[in-house]
Image (cartoon, rainbow, N blue to C red; front, side):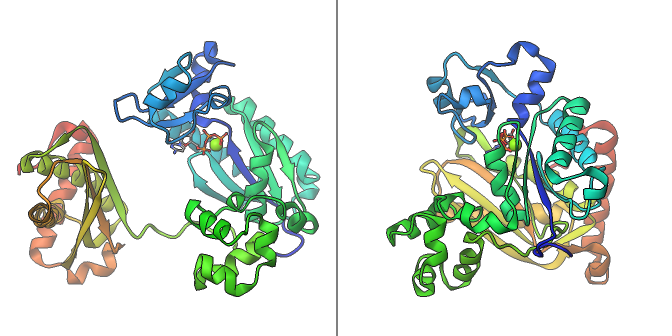
Length: 387
Ligand code: DCP
Ligand code: MG
């Protein structure tokens, strides 16, 4: 891998106000207006807001009720997730034309290794302009591109490129570019780390780069201190590689109104398990563990987990385990809940675990696979096991 040496050129491409811009493709009257896409229920949150709506303080993850107060003249839309994932696929497909090494990291964001492409596409800024134009012509969306000697610098550059632009920092200027920035601008520093650093009077990345190691270890813990210090100087040697296989899968649901009956919780759990179970079997994995998550009315959240004696990918096994966990949890705290979630953990390839599966697990797995096939043909709601 070439990352980290001075000849690397990494692009980070991120679509602007992605969901909103897709909506605008279908309804041109939304162009130039404050548009908000998000959950419309009483507990809905904003998925994204157009740059016009951001001017009013609207942002992702904010409760929609607050967004409505901040921007009453906004156009609020519920969103169309299957459409967004279709568009996302097209976006990634276009990027792959320009580099053999493309790492997609979210629905609208990817890194491209553009090292050594000068002969074909010219200098980086011109290459980025070509890509942006292609994306605009093919799917009609504005995209911003950050260019750097590694993933970290490229990602930070994208923030400066937005909206609808390009921003490049070369290796030689990376440390100076990072130095005056607030610590929170460094990917990997969240609100907790920011606070810990600020408490020690460390506010900028330049101050992180110069801080004594002992001090950083106190703020960030022994494992992260050295890592963050070198990142604060714009150093990042991580290669562009495909993300590792998910080690767990989960699904959760928030109720419109809190629920308190055990049977309602079980019904919700069962639905979630059918969803996660289908994904699990599609991935060819079995799970070694099952965990449930409950969020109570006061937002207190607990998780309870159990390791299976035999790894499984069967809905029945997962359900029985989750149901037992639910009962135990409710004995500890018998209150109404606002959210319930399920995770299957410790995933491993089914093939390598096959010899461990007992006959009960095999039957459960085969029945679940048969149900998957029916659901695939007739839709997810067509069939469900009785409880
Ligand atoms: N998204 C979401 N919930 C969040 C954050 C994002 O549903 N808390 C969705 C909606 C976004 C999309 O993911 O359109 C991409 O996320 P980005 O963070 O890239 O945000 P945008 O593309 O909307 O805006 P920009 O990248 O221009 O800041
Ligand atoms: Mg984006």
